[in-house]
Image (cartoon, rainbow, N blue to C red):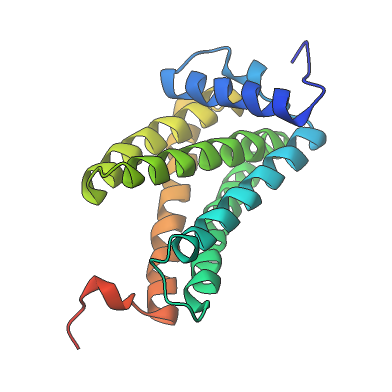
Length: 192
């Protein structure tokens, strides 16, 4: 990145452009992110802030029980669902001897996750049906993850496939494990 942002706001705007570039498959996408440890710290801060806000949003909007249990569970689920695919991505990068791409992957992934989480919340807030939102953003997430592997980490095609499959498998395993440990939410309507 030739002209690194000096403020958090500049970095936020640049990362937003980077996420759009990832969605579009722009080869210059990496230039929008600060792929250093400083950039990792910024992306981690925004990632944690967005996840905390998303966990507290139902309570703020009075759509969650007042006991606060939903907040802790929501935050736990969110962080666990992020940690498992990141761990598997690290394992894949280690296997293909590309651990040098781990910090750039984290930076781009944290920024993309944060922006796409906010986008999902806004789409649901304006009344878009949950199923359409999840399917649409699921496709965007797949595109972004492929492009992070391709444009940020610069993996060859077979390694891109392995990298992305490991992340999605990790996410699926995480959902299943958390479902077994925590159980289904009451409003899902799972018969007893």
